Length: 420
Image 1 (cartoon, rainbow, N blue to C red):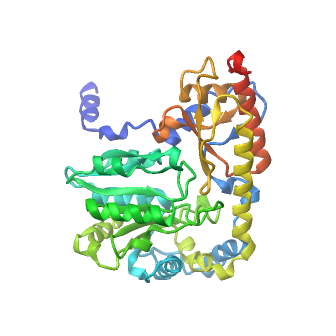
Image 2: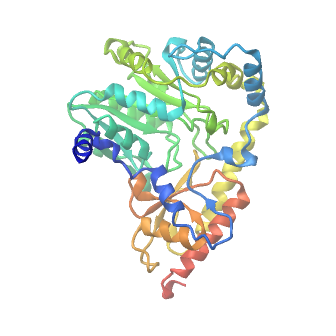
Image 3: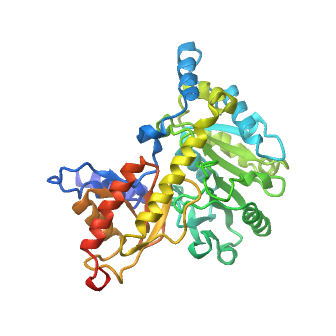
Protein backbone atom coordinates (compact mmCIF):
# COMPACT_ATOMS: atom_id res chain seq x y z
CA UNK A 1 0.00 0.00 0.00
CA UNK A 2 2.84 2.41 0.80
CA UNK A 3 4.30 1.79 -2.67
CA UNK A 4 0.96 2.69 -4.25
CA UNK A 5 0.72 5.91 -2.23
CA UNK A 6 4.28 6.83 -3.20
CA UNK A 7 3.57 6.13 -6.88
CA UNK A 8 0.37 8.17 -6.95
CA UNK A 9 1.88 11.03 -4.95
CA UNK A 10 4.74 11.34 -7.43
CA UNK A 11 2.35 11.53 -10.40
CA UNK A 12 -0.26 13.97 -9.07
CA UNK A 13 -0.20 17.37 -10.75
CA UNK A 14 1.56 19.58 -8.20
CA UNK A 15 -0.52 22.53 -9.39
CA UNK A 16 -3.54 20.89 -7.76
CA UNK A 17 -2.11 21.85 -4.36
CA UNK A 18 -3.44 25.39 -4.62
CA UNK A 19 -4.90 26.40 -1.27
CA UNK A 20 -4.53 30.16 -1.60
CA UNK A 21 -7.68 30.92 -3.57
CA UNK A 22 -10.62 33.14 -2.68
CA UNK A 23 -12.92 30.17 -2.10
CA UNK A 24 -10.34 28.26 -0.10
CA UNK A 25 -9.57 31.28 2.07
CA UNK A 26 -13.23 32.08 2.69
CA UNK A 27 -13.85 28.48 3.69
CA UNK A 28 -10.96 28.71 6.14
CA UNK A 29 -12.31 31.96 7.61
CA UNK A 30 -15.72 30.38 8.15
CA UNK A 31 -14.01 27.74 10.28
CA UNK A 32 -12.76 30.48 12.62
CA UNK A 33 -16.27 31.72 13.49
CA UNK A 34 -17.14 31.65 17.17
CA UNK A 35 -19.99 29.17 17.61
CA UNK A 36 -21.03 30.95 20.79
CA UNK A 37 -21.69 34.19 18.89
CA UNK A 38 -25.42 33.97 18.12
CA UNK A 39 -25.44 36.95 15.77
CA UNK A 40 -25.93 36.14 12.09
CA UNK A 41 -22.73 35.88 10.08
CA UNK A 42 -22.24 38.87 7.76
CA UNK A 43 -20.41 38.03 4.56
CA UNK A 44 -18.85 41.02 2.83
CA UNK A 45 -16.60 38.70 0.92
CA UNK A 46 -18.22 37.42 -2.28
CA UNK A 47 -19.67 39.37 -5.17
CA UNK A 48 -23.07 37.68 -5.17
CA UNK A 49 -25.89 40.20 -5.48
CA UNK A 50 -28.30 37.34 -6.18
CA UNK A 51 -28.11 36.39 -2.50
CA UNK A 52 -30.15 39.48 -1.58
CA UNK A 53 -33.85 40.04 -2.46
CA UNK A 54 -33.22 43.69 -3.37
CA UNK A 55 -31.15 42.47 -6.33
CA UNK A 56 -33.67 39.93 -7.60
CA UNK A 57 -33.36 39.37 -11.33
CA UNK A 58 -35.76 40.88 -13.84
CA UNK A 59 -39.23 39.48 -14.40
CA UNK A 60 -38.38 39.14 -18.11
CA UNK A 61 -35.39 36.90 -17.30
CA UNK A 62 -37.51 34.66 -15.06
CA UNK A 63 -40.23 34.38 -17.69
CA UNK A 64 -37.66 33.59 -20.36
CA UNK A 65 -36.37 30.61 -18.36
CA UNK A 66 -39.89 29.38 -17.58
CA UNK A 67 -40.88 29.60 -21.25
CA UNK A 68 -37.71 27.85 -22.41
CA UNK A 69 -38.17 25.03 -19.91
CA UNK A 70 -41.86 24.51 -20.68
CA UNK A 71 -41.25 24.49 -24.41
CA UNK A 72 -39.44 21.12 -24.07
CA UNK A 73 -37.14 22.24 -26.91
CA UNK A 74 -34.04 22.18 -24.76
CA UNK A 75 -34.07 18.78 -23.07
CA UNK A 76 -31.43 17.26 -25.32
CA UNK A 77 -27.70 17.75 -25.85
CA UNK A 78 -26.66 21.08 -27.32
CA UNK A 79 -23.86 21.79 -29.81
CA UNK A 80 -20.52 22.08 -27.98
CA UNK A 81 -20.20 25.76 -29.02
CA UNK A 82 -23.73 26.62 -27.82
CA UNK A 83 -27.14 26.63 -29.48
CA UNK A 84 -27.40 28.96 -32.53
CA UNK A 85 -30.09 31.32 -31.10
CA UNK A 86 -28.00 31.90 -27.95
CA UNK A 87 -24.85 32.63 -29.96
CA UNK A 88 -26.78 34.99 -32.21
CA UNK A 89 -28.28 36.79 -29.20
CA UNK A 90 -24.87 37.40 -27.62
CA UNK A 91 -23.44 38.66 -30.91
CA UNK A 92 -26.31 41.14 -31.27
CA UNK A 93 -26.14 42.21 -27.61
CA UNK A 94 -22.41 42.97 -27.74
CA UNK A 95 -22.53 44.52 -31.21
CA UNK A 96 -24.71 47.38 -29.89
CA UNK A 97 -21.57 48.89 -28.31
CA UNK A 98 -19.11 48.18 -31.14
CA UNK A 99 -18.15 49.91 -34.40
CA UNK A 100 -18.49 46.58 -36.23
CA UNK A 101 -20.84 43.61 -36.14
CA UNK A 102 -20.01 40.35 -34.45
CA UNK A 103 -21.06 37.08 -36.03
CA UNK A 104 -22.71 34.22 -34.10
CA UNK A 105 -19.62 32.22 -35.14
CA UNK A 106 -17.54 34.55 -32.96
CA UNK A 107 -19.47 33.47 -29.86
CA UNK A 108 -18.94 30.39 -27.66
CA UNK A 109 -21.47 29.77 -24.89
CA UNK A 110 -19.91 28.63 -21.61
CA UNK A 111 -20.79 27.63 -18.06
CA UNK A 112 -20.07 31.05 -16.64
CA UNK A 113 -16.85 33.02 -16.27
CA UNK A 114 -14.88 30.20 -14.65
CA UNK A 115 -15.16 28.01 -17.74
CA UNK A 116 -14.27 30.88 -20.08
CA UNK A 117 -11.13 31.42 -18.04
CA UNK A 118 -10.31 27.71 -18.12
CA UNK A 119 -10.68 27.57 -21.90
CA UNK A 120 -8.57 30.57 -22.81
CA UNK A 121 -5.79 29.74 -20.32
CA UNK A 122 -5.61 26.21 -21.74
CA UNK A 123 -5.50 27.53 -25.31
CA UNK A 124 -2.60 29.94 -24.81
CA UNK A 125 -0.55 27.72 -22.48
CA UNK A 126 2.02 26.67 -25.07
CA UNK A 127 5.57 25.56 -24.15
CA UNK A 128 7.42 28.37 -22.38
CA UNK A 129 4.54 30.84 -22.70
CA UNK A 130 3.77 33.48 -20.09
CA UNK A 131 0.82 35.77 -19.45
CA UNK A 132 0.44 39.17 -17.78
CA UNK A 133 -2.14 39.34 -14.99
CA UNK A 134 -3.20 42.44 -13.03
CA UNK A 135 -2.19 42.93 -9.41
CA UNK A 136 -4.50 43.16 -7.57
CA UNK A 137 -6.64 40.84 -9.62
CA UNK A 138 -8.98 37.87 -9.59
CA UNK A 139 -7.13 35.04 -7.86
CA UNK A 140 -8.73 32.29 -9.96
CA UNK A 141 -6.68 33.39 -12.97
CA UNK A 142 -3.47 32.58 -11.19
CA UNK A 143 -4.84 29.24 -10.00
CA UNK A 144 -6.01 28.33 -13.49
CA UNK A 145 -2.62 29.28 -14.98
CA UNK A 146 -0.90 27.04 -12.45
CA UNK A 147 -3.04 24.08 -13.52
CA UNK A 148 -2.17 24.82 -17.15
CA UNK A 149 1.57 25.24 -16.42
CA UNK A 150 1.35 28.78 -17.77
CA UNK A 151 3.87 31.20 -16.28
CA UNK A 152 2.30 34.27 -14.65
CA UNK A 153 3.82 37.73 -14.53
CA UNK A 154 2.00 40.42 -12.56
CA UNK A 155 1.67 44.00 -13.70
CA UNK A 156 0.51 46.58 -11.17
CA UNK A 157 -2.67 48.60 -10.99
CA UNK A 158 -1.90 51.94 -9.35
CA UNK A 159 -4.20 52.96 -6.47
CA UNK A 160 -2.95 56.54 -6.55
CA UNK A 161 -4.15 56.76 -10.17
CA UNK A 162 -7.57 55.18 -9.70
CA UNK A 163 -6.19 51.67 -10.30
CA UNK A 164 -4.96 52.42 -13.81
CA UNK A 165 -2.43 50.12 -15.49
CA UNK A 166 1.27 50.68 -14.86
CA UNK A 167 2.36 50.67 -18.51
CA UNK A 168 6.05 50.96 -17.75
CA UNK A 169 5.71 47.81 -15.64
CA UNK A 170 3.89 45.99 -18.45
CA UNK A 171 6.64 46.81 -20.93
CA UNK A 172 9.35 45.72 -18.50
CA UNK A 173 7.65 42.36 -17.90
CA UNK A 174 6.85 41.36 -21.48
CA UNK A 175 9.26 39.34 -23.62
CA UNK A 176 9.12 37.17 -26.73
CA UNK A 177 7.27 34.45 -24.77
CA UNK A 178 4.53 36.73 -23.46
CA UNK A 179 1.39 35.81 -25.35
CA UNK A 180 -1.42 37.73 -23.65
CA UNK A 181 -2.47 40.35 -21.14
CA UNK A 182 -5.63 40.07 -19.03
CA UNK A 183 -7.61 43.17 -18.11
CA UNK A 184 -10.64 43.17 -15.84
CA UNK A 185 -13.04 46.02 -16.50
CA UNK A 186 -15.07 47.02 -14.52
CA UNK A 187 -12.51 45.94 -11.98
CA UNK A 188 -12.52 42.98 -9.65
CA UNK A 189 -11.31 43.62 -6.95
CA UNK A 190 -10.79 47.37 -7.26
CA UNK A 191 -14.18 48.68 -8.43
CA UNK A 192 -12.44 50.83 -11.06
CA UNK A 193 -13.75 51.56 -14.57
CA UNK A 194 -11.22 52.21 -17.33
CA UNK A 195 -11.83 55.25 -19.54
CA UNK A 196 -11.87 55.09 -23.34
CA UNK A 197 -8.49 56.83 -23.41
CA UNK A 198 -6.95 54.34 -20.99
CA UNK A 199 -8.33 51.36 -22.92
CA UNK A 200 -6.91 52.87 -26.11
CA UNK A 201 -3.49 53.02 -24.47
CA UNK A 202 -3.87 49.35 -23.44
CA UNK A 203 -4.64 48.50 -27.07
CA UNK A 204 -1.63 50.49 -28.32
CA UNK A 205 0.64 48.78 -25.79
CA UNK A 206 -0.69 45.36 -26.82
CA UNK A 207 0.04 46.16 -30.47
CA UNK A 208 3.56 47.32 -29.60
CA UNK A 209 4.29 44.15 -27.61
CA UNK A 210 2.38 41.74 -29.85
CA UNK A 211 -0.06 40.65 -27.11
CA UNK A 212 -3.49 39.13 -27.26
CA UNK A 213 -5.87 41.07 -24.99
CA UNK A 214 -8.18 38.97 -22.83
CA UNK A 215 -10.89 41.35 -21.62
CA UNK A 216 -12.79 40.08 -18.59
CA UNK A 217 -16.04 42.04 -18.73
CA UNK A 218 -18.18 39.92 -16.44
CA UNK A 219 -19.18 43.16 -14.69
CA UNK A 220 -19.86 44.95 -17.98
CA UNK A 221 -22.34 47.85 -17.67
CA UNK A 222 -22.40 47.60 -13.86
CA UNK A 223 -21.15 51.17 -13.51
CA UNK A 224 -22.47 54.02 -11.36
CA UNK A 225 -19.76 56.68 -11.36
CA UNK A 226 -18.56 59.32 -13.80
CA UNK A 227 -16.80 56.89 -16.16
CA UNK A 228 -19.07 54.94 -18.54
CA UNK A 229 -18.35 51.33 -19.44
CA UNK A 230 -16.56 50.92 -22.76
CA UNK A 231 -15.94 47.38 -24.05
CA UNK A 232 -12.34 46.63 -24.95
CA UNK A 233 -13.57 45.17 -28.23
CA UNK A 234 -14.08 48.67 -29.68
CA UNK A 235 -10.37 48.35 -30.53
CA UNK A 236 -10.78 44.91 -32.13
CA UNK A 237 -9.91 46.22 -35.60
CA UNK A 238 -6.46 47.19 -34.30
CA UNK A 239 -5.66 44.21 -32.05
CA UNK A 240 -7.61 40.96 -31.55
CA UNK A 241 -9.63 40.84 -28.34
CA UNK A 242 -11.02 37.84 -26.48
CA UNK A 243 -14.04 39.05 -24.50
CA UNK A 244 -15.28 37.12 -21.48
CA UNK A 245 -18.75 37.90 -20.19
CA UNK A 246 -21.84 36.47 -18.54
CA UNK A 247 -25.34 37.21 -17.30
CA UNK A 248 -24.32 36.46 -13.70
CA UNK A 249 -23.79 39.95 -12.36
CA UNK A 250 -25.79 42.38 -14.50
CA UNK A 251 -28.87 40.16 -14.18
CA UNK A 252 -28.08 38.96 -10.62
CA UNK A 253 -28.24 35.26 -11.51
CA UNK A 254 -24.88 33.94 -10.38
CA UNK A 255 -26.27 30.42 -9.99
CA UNK A 256 -27.48 30.15 -13.59
CA UNK A 257 -23.90 29.67 -14.81
CA UNK A 258 -24.24 31.08 -18.31
CA UNK A 259 -21.49 33.07 -19.99
CA UNK A 260 -19.71 33.63 -23.27
CA UNK A 261 -16.25 33.71 -24.76
CA UNK A 262 -16.17 35.94 -27.86
CA UNK A 263 -13.46 36.41 -30.47
CA UNK A 264 -13.59 40.10 -31.43
CA UNK A 265 -11.36 39.94 -34.46
CA UNK A 266 -12.54 41.66 -37.68
CA UNK A 267 -9.09 41.12 -39.26
CA UNK A 268 -9.18 37.33 -38.83
CA UNK A 269 -5.89 37.21 -36.91
CA UNK A 270 -7.18 34.68 -34.40
CA UNK A 271 -8.21 32.36 -37.23
CA UNK A 272 -4.80 32.59 -38.87
CA UNK A 273 -2.97 31.93 -35.59
CA UNK A 274 -5.05 28.79 -34.88
CA UNK A 275 -6.41 30.23 -31.64
CA UNK A 276 -9.99 29.80 -32.87
CA UNK A 277 -9.22 26.20 -33.82
CA UNK A 278 -7.83 25.56 -30.33
CA UNK A 279 -10.88 27.14 -28.66
CA UNK A 280 -13.13 24.77 -30.62
CA UNK A 281 -10.97 21.80 -29.70
CA UNK A 282 -11.04 22.74 -26.03
CA UNK A 283 -14.82 23.06 -26.02
CA UNK A 284 -15.18 19.53 -27.35
CA UNK A 285 -13.84 18.00 -24.13
CA UNK A 286 -15.68 20.02 -21.46
CA UNK A 287 -19.25 20.10 -20.18
CA UNK A 288 -21.77 22.35 -21.90
CA UNK A 289 -23.87 24.93 -20.04
CA UNK A 290 -27.48 24.11 -19.17
CA UNK A 291 -29.56 24.00 -22.32
CA UNK A 292 -32.76 25.69 -21.13
CA UNK A 293 -30.77 28.70 -19.86
CA UNK A 294 -29.23 28.89 -23.33
CA UNK A 295 -32.73 28.71 -24.76
CA UNK A 296 -33.80 31.63 -22.58
CA UNK A 297 -30.81 33.79 -23.52
CA UNK A 298 -32.33 35.56 -26.55
CA UNK A 299 -35.18 36.87 -24.40
CA UNK A 300 -32.89 37.73 -21.48
CA UNK A 301 -30.50 39.76 -23.65
CA UNK A 302 -33.31 41.54 -25.49
CA UNK A 303 -33.15 44.77 -23.49
CA UNK A 304 -36.51 45.91 -24.87
CA UNK A 305 -38.17 43.04 -22.98
CA UNK A 306 -36.64 44.10 -19.66
CA UNK A 307 -38.36 46.81 -17.65
CA UNK A 308 -36.27 49.93 -18.19
CA UNK A 309 -36.16 50.53 -14.44
CA UNK A 310 -34.54 47.18 -13.65
CA UNK A 311 -30.95 48.13 -14.47
CA UNK A 312 -31.22 51.65 -13.07
CA UNK A 313 -32.54 50.29 -9.76
CA UNK A 314 -29.64 47.83 -9.52
CA UNK A 315 -27.00 50.44 -10.24
CA UNK A 316 -28.67 52.90 -7.87
CA UNK A 317 -28.49 50.30 -5.10
CA UNK A 318 -24.79 49.76 -5.81
CA UNK A 319 -24.14 53.51 -5.86
CA UNK A 320 -25.93 53.85 -2.51
CA UNK A 321 -23.82 51.00 -1.16
CA UNK A 322 -20.57 52.72 -2.19
CA UNK A 323 -21.69 55.87 -0.36
CA UNK A 324 -22.39 53.81 2.77
CA UNK A 325 -19.06 52.01 2.43
CA UNK A 326 -16.94 55.12 1.97
CA UNK A 327 -18.75 57.12 4.66
CA UNK A 328 -18.51 54.31 7.23
CA UNK A 329 -14.86 53.63 6.52
CA UNK A 330 -14.05 57.25 7.39
CA UNK A 331 -15.28 56.44 10.91
CA UNK A 332 -13.12 53.31 11.29
CA UNK A 333 -9.60 53.65 12.69
CA UNK A 334 -6.91 51.81 10.76
CA UNK A 335 -8.78 51.50 7.45
CA UNK A 336 -8.91 53.81 4.43
CA UNK A 337 -10.53 53.58 1.01
CA UNK A 338 -8.24 55.57 -1.32
CA UNK A 339 -10.44 55.26 -4.41
CA UNK A 340 -14.23 55.28 -4.45
CA UNK A 341 -15.58 52.42 -6.59
CA UNK A 342 -17.30 53.34 -9.84
CA UNK A 343 -18.21 49.85 -11.03
CA UNK A 344 -18.46 46.13 -10.26
CA UNK A 345 -19.31 45.16 -6.66
CA UNK A 346 -15.96 45.40 -4.86
CA UNK A 347 -13.70 47.90 -3.17
CA UNK A 348 -10.10 47.62 -2.01
CA UNK A 349 -9.46 49.19 1.39
CA UNK A 350 -6.06 49.67 2.97
CA UNK A 351 -5.01 48.69 6.48
CA UNK A 352 -2.93 51.15 8.50
CA UNK A 353 -1.05 49.21 11.16
CA UNK A 354 0.26 52.39 12.74
CA UNK A 355 -3.25 52.72 14.20
CA UNK A 356 -3.83 49.06 15.05
CA UNK A 357 -2.30 46.67 17.55
CA UNK A 358 -2.44 42.90 18.06
CA UNK A 359 -2.90 42.46 14.29
CA UNK A 360 -0.03 40.93 12.31
CA UNK A 361 -1.24 41.37 8.74
CA UNK A 362 -4.36 41.30 6.55
CA UNK A 363 -4.86 37.55 6.97
CA UNK A 364 -4.62 37.87 10.76
CA UNK A 365 -7.08 40.79 10.61
CA UNK A 366 -9.64 38.69 8.72
CA UNK A 367 -9.24 35.63 10.94
CA UNK A 368 -9.72 37.69 14.11
CA UNK A 369 -12.59 39.67 12.59
CA UNK A 370 -14.39 36.41 11.81
CA UNK A 371 -13.75 35.07 15.31
CA UNK A 372 -14.67 38.23 17.22
CA UNK A 373 -17.41 39.83 15.10
CA UNK A 374 -18.71 37.07 12.78
CA UNK A 375 -17.88 39.19 9.73
CA UNK A 376 -16.14 37.72 6.68
CA UNK A 377 -14.02 39.84 4.33
CA UNK A 378 -11.29 38.72 1.96
CA UNK A 379 -7.62 39.39 2.79
CA UNK A 380 -5.95 41.46 0.10
CA UNK A 381 -3.01 39.06 -0.11
CA UNK A 382 -5.33 36.61 -1.91
CA UNK A 383 -5.83 39.10 -4.75
CA UNK A 384 -2.17 40.14 -4.80
CA UNK A 385 -2.06 43.11 -2.43
CA UNK A 386 -0.86 42.34 1.07
CA UNK A 387 -2.30 44.34 3.98
CA UNK A 388 -5.35 45.41 2.06
CA UNK A 389 -8.90 44.01 2.20
CA UNK A 390 -11.41 43.28 -0.54
CA UNK A 391 -14.94 44.17 0.54
CA UNK A 392 -18.08 43.40 -1.45
CA UNK A 393 -20.88 45.96 -1.31
CA UNK A 394 -23.36 43.94 -3.43
CA UNK A 395 -25.65 43.53 -0.45
CA UNK A 396 -28.76 44.95 1.11
CA UNK A 397 -27.81 48.44 2.42
CA UNK A 398 -28.79 47.61 6.02
CA UNK A 399 -26.76 44.40 5.87
CA UNK A 400 -23.73 46.39 4.70
CA UNK A 401 -24.21 48.99 7.43
CA UNK A 402 -24.43 46.31 10.12
CA UNK A 403 -21.32 44.58 8.83
CA UNK A 404 -19.31 47.81 8.77
CA UNK A 405 -20.49 48.70 12.28
CA UNK A 406 -19.03 45.39 13.46
CA UNK A 407 -15.78 46.13 11.60
CA UNK A 408 -15.74 49.51 13.34
CA UNK A 409 -16.23 47.86 16.74
CA UNK A 410 -13.43 45.40 15.96
CA UNK A 411 -10.99 48.12 14.89
CA UNK A 412 -11.75 50.21 17.96
CA UNK A 413 -10.99 47.20 20.17
CA UNK A 414 -7.65 46.80 18.39
CA UNK A 415 -6.91 50.50 18.04
CA UNK A 416 -3.76 51.93 19.58
CA UNK A 417 -4.83 54.18 22.43
CA UNK A 418 -3.41 57.41 21.07
CA UNK A 419 -5.57 56.94 17.95
CA UNK A 420 -8.77 56.29 19.92
